Image (tube, rainbow over all chains, first blue to last red):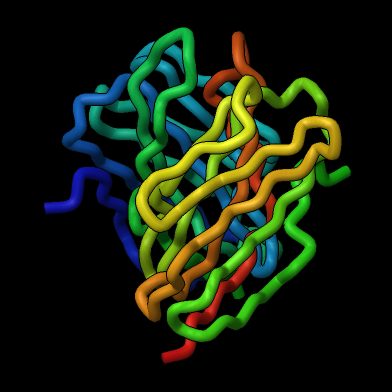
Amino acid sequence: DADVTQTPRNRITKTGKRIMLECSQTKGHDRMYWYRQDPGLGLQLIYYSFDVKDINKGEISDGYSVSRQAQAKFSLSLESAIPNQTALYFCATSVGGASYNEQFFGPGTRLTVL
Amino acid sequence: DQQVKQNSPSLSVQEGRISILNCDYTNSMFDYFLWYKKYPAEGPTFLISISSIKDKNEDGRFTVFLNKSAKHLSLHIVPSQPGDSAVYFCAAIRSGGSNYKLTFGKGTLLTVNP
């Protein structure tokens, strides 16, 4: 079974619609992240959470919001989707600590905004 | 301004030969570097890393070399296998308070031909 799961895996929506992408993990990690990948580009950090009560903006948070419902769940919302939010979205998790710890990625959600 | 650059969008090699993937960075504060591998329809998976206090790290067929003075690192795969065909992302981290923040390159698509 996958340790980091994302739902849905694919979504097509229209401009102006509200969309929620969900991420669940069974790794017991405290830290969770949302990334976006555009074609031909690397991953960019949207939001990150170090624990249930700690949520922080990443590089490209405009137009997005998140909710950390539990240690294992971190959802990403697009309140009013626009076409340039068409991208591949990845959730990731890691343990915390003073040094870098490996981030484990989910399989991704392909979002298309028409 | 892109701080981690992978200037080759794609690379094609023959099975059994060496694959060399290159990465340059501009931020001298980066002190930890990673390579991630990504297959289609899957999330990135960690492959190998290197600290800035080292110039080489080896793990089986994979070796990462770091040239700090040139701000350049490379991933060598020897021998290359068809299953190595994937997108490879170089990523960098600045330790300390930002040890969670991965800065990714755009990726290089490696194709290993049988």
